[in-house]
Image (cartoon, rainbow, N blue to C red):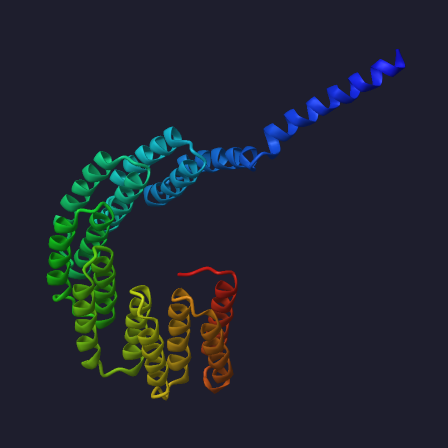
Length: 312
């Protein structure tokens, strides 16, 4: 009996091992689903509709990645309902544009177009030029993603018109950068270059060195995103040279932190760290102890973000 029992036990144990491996270890799928399920339950309980919508959109893409397309559709439908609960038109329009992109990514183009139309109607109710231009840029980017080149071009032209009414230089440069990136996505490189050139023209009128340096860093980031790496590095250097004109070391070091963040977003992490280290060396020159400590805390927090690969 023993000569036959041991092989049977061995075979039985082997089968059990295969079942356990198949359920828990194959591809790691067994470990992902409970996490997604728990995150989904937590997202549904989020009281802030804006945060709920964002979380549900992120979860939907995770579900799509593990081939749970039905779950992804349900999550996006719930995100759509959360978007509609957002009272502020500016925030609502931006969320809807992002939602449309997510619908398109999971192969639901009809829903994507429907949500885009909802976003457009929401944008029509926005009066503030910067918010209107920024949301039109987001809408144009979504249209470009969906290969609606003509519609995207028209939307981005409207975004440019709204951007021309923005008084705040930093806000205008940021919006123009968004518009340029959207033109680039829409396969209109000449239009992207033209918009960036208009950003340069706006910067030339800036008298404040900190404002000028941060605007230059924003343009440099845009150049990097458009694939113009050499030009971006040159513009980043101009931004850094501009900060040296600031006699107020609190303003100078904080401008350097802003530039470091943009460098990090452009993938130039070593240069970003170098700039932060230089900023830290300048902090003893800040006469007010509280502002000195505030700046040091910000520099170290930003350094930690960059080391962890987080981008604001």
